[in-house]
Image (cartoon, rainbow, N blue to C red; front, side, top):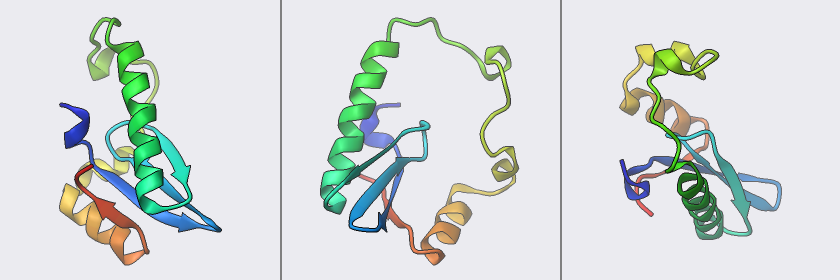
Length: 94
């Protein structure tokens, strides 16, 4: 999966906008929606560049529990609809 396929949500928090990746546990902020998404993209690119040399792992090999395992029972569309109802802005493209 390439970064351009990642799903993100953006919301306003105080005077800033917060962008969070739904694919990787990353969050960043900016003064505008576009700025928050650009900052998130840059952080993800740097992170993925650093981790590209690491060996691939399967879920069974990763220590700990997957984040929010209860969400596995819902489809992506259901999760996005629920987030949108709570004021999140869904961005599917960069």
